[in-house]
Length: 357
Image (tube, rainbow, N blue to C red; front, side, top):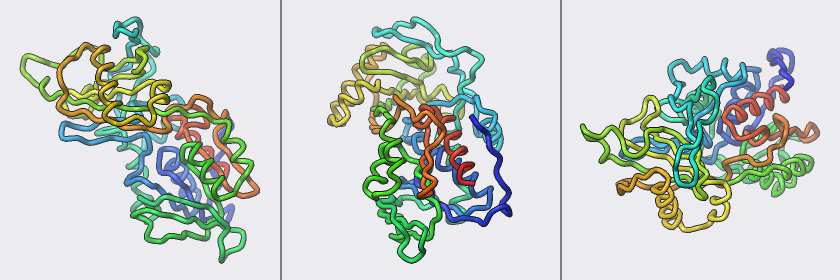
């Protein structure tokens, strides 16, 4: 991977740049562009930054219902994490179990030298911390969905964005020299198609494939008894070959979490695809049955909820760190460029920013 250095702000006139999406790729991109002296506005349709680095709160504690953990391999990612001392901590699940269809342990995954890291008190804390300076200066527009990218009607050679949503107090945002799409590839492609812009990017993104994921969240407060440390198996995380379940994690085993026993269960890409439009209660019942089969936990959870991620795990990545159409000055980045890891998203956003700088 080519590593570029950021040119100092005085080497070029500051530009106005729109970043669509406030996941780790979008925020990494925006932070780097601001450090290079550019004026940046980040548009996010959700209520907060984070993307799939998400945490769902409940009366029993939080669930990292998107990204479960991350690894650190790139020196630049490691340096960035050093800006959040104490917020990122190792999770003792670095010997992840591999289960057969009946829930029996058949192996341990990943070499023990590669630590699993989590943000505390929830996975969304890291991106939200990095997004804080942008929010403080009015550069983060939440609950604002970009519906269309079009030529600026008042400033030749620039872009304007049509937006909707509860936070979109200004429906048209104009005067952008560059637009970066830091959203799932299918969403980026759809926005470009509907806007009739950057045809070369549309063609590139059509090669990317990202699978959905149904996630089940369970809480067992009845396990909080003097004679009972926890329910079920002694492992805290596992990959499963069960036809419905791909991943299970005991949320309460992560550092900085509530001690109430909670589990996050992620369905396999294949099962999620087949049942993508199923009724929520039907999905919940099927995944709860599979959870019981795999873990042997037959207690009824007082809390059970599901969440559907339409775009979760990259099956066919772009094969490079980002996509860039120099003619239109529109780019796209995200974990799907390289894979589906948190670090992939960070590196993609960073390299996208360095391209623009």
